[in-house]
Image 1 (cartoon, one colour):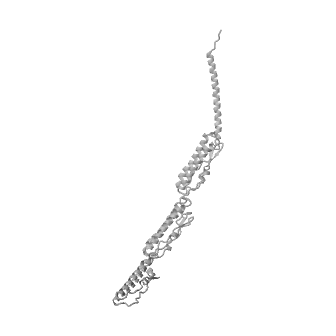
Image 2 (image 1 turned 45 degrees about the vertical axis):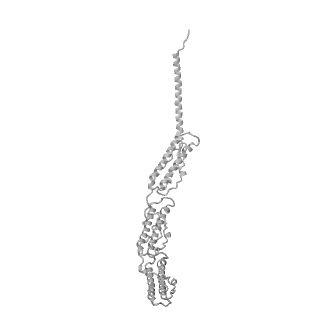
Image 3 (image 1 turned 30 degrees about the vertical axis):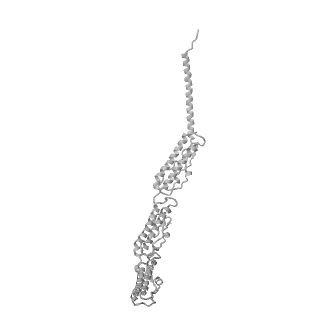
Length: 393
């Protein structure tokens, strides 16, 4: 008798076997998952974190105008550290032995260097730009084996106080003041017509000094090593030079133009550490007394014109008129000397008084020679020798 296989029974046995295999696989997956979880936990515990030098403690006093920008960049340093730590955690085991240096620490250093530079620049816009050790502050190391995060970068800074307190002399404590040579005490006699302009320019010298001292207070710490020279003392020297030149010109319009040594009197130095202001420039000058100036004026000294020939009767009257005219010319020259004391340059008297006087005398002596020559032999009265005059100092 034939025996028949029961396919139903076989099918049931196959199903049982499949369920057994599936159960074993499921258990294996669960066990593998538990193992991976344990492994991941162990790996996470060992992830390094970045350890960066703090920047805020290295900063100088922060000007109030730079405070907000400095704090934004300090906060950015913290953000950069957090991003680097996140990348370390998410890239565990990636790359070769130099992966962390090339992909995380190197770029982090570049970002930090740029940020620290921006901090220095923002301070330098309103004060002396600090010389921060950017390379060392930008370089970060690792806290190995899950050493935790380093202390975060401080992000709040105190703004520097305003200008230092005054010392009672118009200066601020610790702030230098300008020290300029005086000009008023070096002026020659000032003509009355120049007095007002001289006094205006002397007052302007004081104003220029006050403005420079105010600028020194308002810009404490600004710029580099040459800031005060380039931005304050240099421009002050230029202003003073122009004012002193104007005084020379004002006097020269009514008297001899003086050389007040503008090159020597224009430069100013500093009273360091709030040394106080020197005595202000005198702003009142005594005008020269016209009578005194005239009394001290020189007079002309002219040779006598002597006629050593017989004078024809027909020429006598003309000779007498011209001899009188020679005296009048001398008197006019003396009057001009008194009324123009100090005017013009060193050649003023020669060009404006003695030269024209010589020409007048030459013409007058020539007329006398001609007058005699109409009725007798024309004499040579030596007009060339008798025309020039000198000065009685």
